Structure formats: C-alpha cells, structure tokens
Amino acid sequence: MKISKYSYGKIKAAVRRLMLIAGAERIGSKADNILTDAILEVADEVAKEAVFLANKAKRKTVLREDIELAAQLLKLR
Image (cartoon, rainbow, N blue to C red; front, side):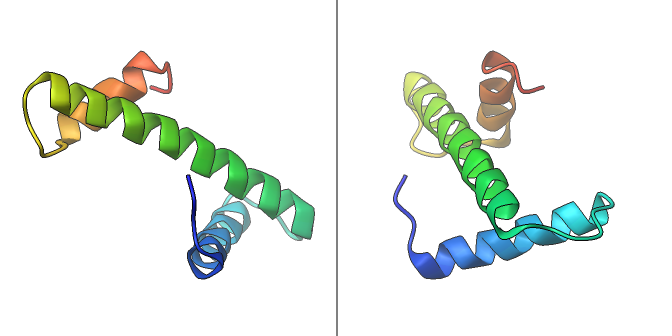
C-alpha cells in the first residue's frame, strides 16, 4: 500500500498515542515506525480480503460484516 508522507505521519502520531495509552513512558523512533508499518500491513490485508468478499457477494460497497469476516478469516479475531 502506498501512503503519502503526510498520511504516514498522521498514522504514526496515532500509533504513538496508542502506545502511550498502553502504558509506554517513552517511545523510540524506530519502535513507532515498526509498529506503524505492522499495523498498515495488517490493515492492507484485511482491506483486500474485505473487498474480495464484497465483490464475491456482487456488491461494490464494503460492509462492516465484510471487515469482520475478513479479520476472522485472517485469524485476527
């Protein structure tokens, strides 16, 4: 998935906030980059699977159920 530097920065900031909420006192710059990349990779896989499921159901709209089923199929839930 290709993301602009601006969008990546926004996502990285959200990941840093999540890490702080999870209890991190300090966060290394490489740590948040690695977690951001991992989250984006998982999100990309779920999105692709959800789009596939919607297409299989002959829909153009991806529904919540598609996301939930995609996460289950990828063993994320």
